[in-house]
Structure formats: structure tokens, C-alpha cells
Image 1 (cartoon, rainbow, N blue to C red):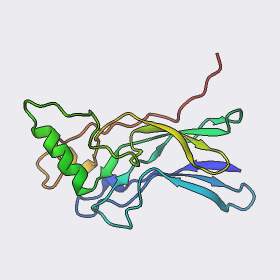
Image 2: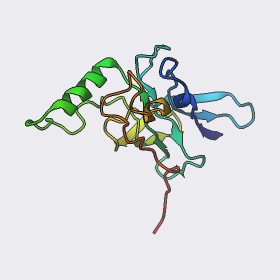
Image 3: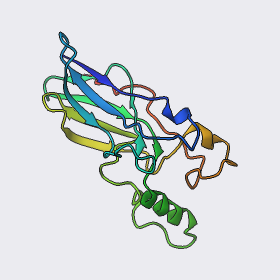
Length: 170
């Protein structure tokens, strides 16, 4: 078997065309190429551009932990988010005296962007994860802040992991 993370150049398209890609991690049969399991990093967007998109898998050599039966992956930023998440972020950005009740209250638990995760080698089920980035909707068109309809608070940080996680023995 071998393991492959998916990525996309979709964040380079215009705001009108962006975005439906969802990052995923796949286990394949090395002899046949058959997909044995696929785990998406975001909820299904059903091909709708007004839902979650992004969370590409970063790094081409994810560490496999045979002792714990896990593989570790890291993900990138969102390209788009549902309107309720954008509205939540807008409310947070506009708060002047009352701090948010939770620093990541706009980040839903099934959003695994800007995260590192441990996946079960046999099933692909997410065993644990840690979301580091908070709200991070970003794509190239919004680098120019004069572009209309970009996510609030932008340009957002475009936080990603530079490579796959590393497993070290000390």
C-alpha cells in the first residue's frame, strides 16, 4: 500500500470561479492503484462554491507510525468558507470592547484546515487532530485588498505547513 495527499491550484482562480476543492488523504493498493480509503479534511461541499474549500495536504512523505498504526498529515488554509463562518468572523473583526468567548469560535470541528492530524492506517479515520490556524480563508485574488467579495479581515495569513510532519525518535 501507499499513501497520497491531495492538493490543488484552485486558489489561483478568480473569485467568481473559486472554489470547491477539498483536501484529502488516500490509501492506495500499490499493485492495482485501487483506492482503499479516502479521508477528506473538510465537510462535503456538494460542488457548491459557497461552502468550505481548501485544506490541501502538505508534504509528500507523511510519517507512518507502525507502532501506533497511524499516519500523520498536515493541511493548509481554506480557499472559501460557508457564509455563517464568514459572518462569524466579521462579527469578531468588528468587536471593539468584548473579546470573543473562544479564540476559534468561528472554526467548526469538522474543518481541518491549518491542522495536523493522525489517521488510522487501516481505516483512514481521524484519531486526533489539532487545528492551529483559526480562521484563515485566503486565495491569490484576495492578495489585492481592492478585490470585492473577499473574506473579511483579509488578506488573511495564508498559513500552511511547509512540509509533512516528522516523526523523530530521541
